[in-house]
Structures are given as structure tokens and as C-alpha cells.
Image (cartoon, rainbow, N blue to C red; front, side, top):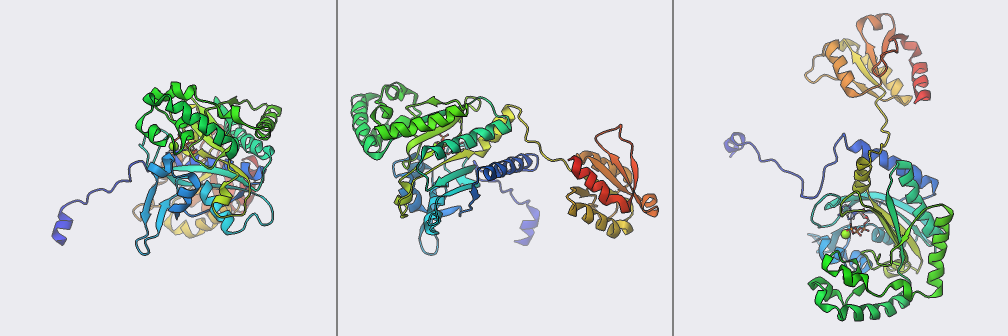
Length: 437
Ligand code: ATP
Ligand code: MG
């Protein structure tokens, strides 16, 4: 056995299809986006919430609706091997946030503005902009009923596009009204599709009486004409629902945020009512929705909480980053400040203490470290310094240290002369560097 193990090289194990590693080179962009979003959320007074990746399956079945793509086809569900409990890797996080809010009576002292980051899991066909593990940033405002919070959520996403330099995204807006209004529309919708039954695909036919609104969401090209001519929910809205939509639009207008009313926009989950919206681009192929959301006034009650209105959105991080790349937008990734070159092994303890002092002041420093136990030549350390992308190289050479100094040389600006800096002045150098950053 042992012999065989040493003789044959072990087979490589690769990641699950549709689930990606995010490696250095790319991960800096993720971090930069996350930092931008954190700052944005603070400006709008949203607080961070972190919920488990695994939830009881019933949460999604009850929350999202049984006759939805996610629940019917896309969930990673399994039974707990010890107690048989039905569990699911979260396909989205609105239901999880609502579960947590209810479980911890978080609305007891008034409404809450919450946001999250994290991986979601859906068993879909992997393609550009569509993965089996993907990431969402989401914002949920719970306990608010007025249109101003719907609008504020939209303005917040719009502000992020502007800050990132993302262009050419269209805001689509619709109202799904209230359940009573939807009932009337539902009857008309079933009638319409029944009289066009010949063009429905098998899935649409099956869903016709279970969840006819889902038919409007179908991507089947053969069905687009009949979807286009279907009765519009907007025509079934009562005064109150219409006024809610009008107020959202008035706030968007006052902020010069353009939108198009799309009466076909229904979203993929059952929990929405009144305002729904999507930010869509044509630059990512058919995976063009980068952020989507809406109002879900009945979900909290459905998950067992005291009835309370709410609204939220989720954006697809992969799609936002892809679009940024497509548009050559930049995320301003902070460069490494310095690379430390050390000539003698015996100087390492002393040098490390200086580096710690600088790092405590906020300077980022990559210390040269040996791969094989021996200190590399100054020349080869310099090469590494160049390749690191650092702004400065700090040379702790024998001569420098003998004089109580360090040589500081800019790696970016050839016109900047290298300077011999007394070690006692390093703090001032760091402060100067920080003030110019
Ligand atoms: P789509 O119509 O593209 O399937 P969706 O309506 O299922 O999207 P939501 O559940 O509303 O998507 O999720 C919000 C956002 O999360 C989407 O707008 C998209 O940006 C992103 N997203 C959803 N599914 C995936 C996926 N499989 N891979 C990558 N991003 C995704
Ligand atoms: Mg989907």
C-alpha cells in the first residue's frame, strides 16, 4: 500500500463546477469593492448582519414560494446526517435576514436598516455571470412602509454605480401591487394564457394555475409575444398602490435618477409586493441584471414574525466586477508602501523592530524573507522589490545600519533622489508618507 502511494502521483482535486476560487490579482478588486460598499452603507446608516450559510430548507420553501425556479430546481439541499433535519445552502439572503430579525425580535425597538455580504448557492448552468457559488451584497430595510425608503434604497445603489464609474445601467421599475389586486390580475392572466395554450412550454403549462405570474418571467423566446400581450398588473392597481409608485418616482425624479417602467418585471421570488426594480446592463450578455430588489411586506409575517413591512435589494458581486472590467473602471487599489531589503541575517531582529514600528503607524511593508534559509543578494532582493509594486524600497544594508540609517529610494519616481534617512527619523518619514497617501 505504502509503496503504491509513493509510486503513483496523487490525482489532483479540483473545485466544484461553477464554484470559483478568487485569487490574489482578483481578490484585491473584491476587497476594494467591499470597502467602498461598507463606506456607502455607513453613509446611509445601514448596519451589518451576518447570518449562517446553511438554513432550514423550510425557510426558503415558505419564503420564496414553492413554484419558483430557485425552490423547484436550484437549491443545494441535504439532510443533516445525524438528525435528518432538511437543510439548504442559502440561495439568497433576504429570507435568512428576516429569519434572524424575527428570531432576535430585532424590530422591537423600531425599524432596522441592515446589509450583508456573502456567498449564495444555486444549482444553475454555469456561464458568464452565472455561477453555482456566487456572491451578493444586499441591503434590507425592515419595519418601514413608506415609498421614501424604497427610493432611498434605489438611490443608494445608483450612488454606488456613480462612485464606481459604472455607466449604461438602466433602472427598470414596476409595481406588483397588493395581494387583492394581484388576484384580479391572476384571473385575467390565466385566461389570457389559456387562450394561447399552444405556445406555452411544458413548464409554463404546469405553472399556469399554480403561479401564473411566473410565466411573465420566462426567458423562452417562443413565448415572448404572448407574454408581451398579457394583461398588465399596472392596470389592476388601486389608488393606494398607484400613489406609492408615484411617490417613489417623484423621489427618483427629484434626484435625476432615470428609470423605465417595465410592466413585465415580476422578479423570481413570490415574496414581493408593490415596488420591484432591477438595474440592467446590455454589456454582460444575457446575465444583465446587476442588482435587483423590491418590497416584501408579507414575508416577515410568513416567517412567523409580527407583521411588518420591508424592502431590499441584492447585487451580484461577480457581475458588478465584470461590468467594471468591461467598462475599464478602476477600483483604486492601495499600493504597497514599501519593500524592506536586508543584507545580513544577523540584522533581522533589529530591522524587524523598525518595520513593526512603521506598520503600527499604518505603513504597509513587505519584508524580504528567504526561501531557502540563506539571505539573497541585495541585487536579487531589489528585483523582488521592483516586482512587488511597492512605492519605496527601504535598504537596511551593512553600511546604512553602521551609520544608524536606512536608504529610502522611490521605485515609482526616478527623479526622486534616494535619501539616507536616520533610523531615529523613520517615524517622521512614515507620517509624511501617510499624509500624502
Ligand atoms: P437572473 O434572472 O439573472 O437569474 P435572479 O432574478 O435569479 O437573476 P436574484 O435572485 O434577484 O437574481 O439575485 C440578485 C442578483 O444576484 C442578480 O441580479 C444577479 O446580479 C445575482 N445573481 C443571481 N443569480 C446568480 C448566479 N447564479 N450567478 C451570479 N450572480 C447571480
Ligand atoms: Mg435566477
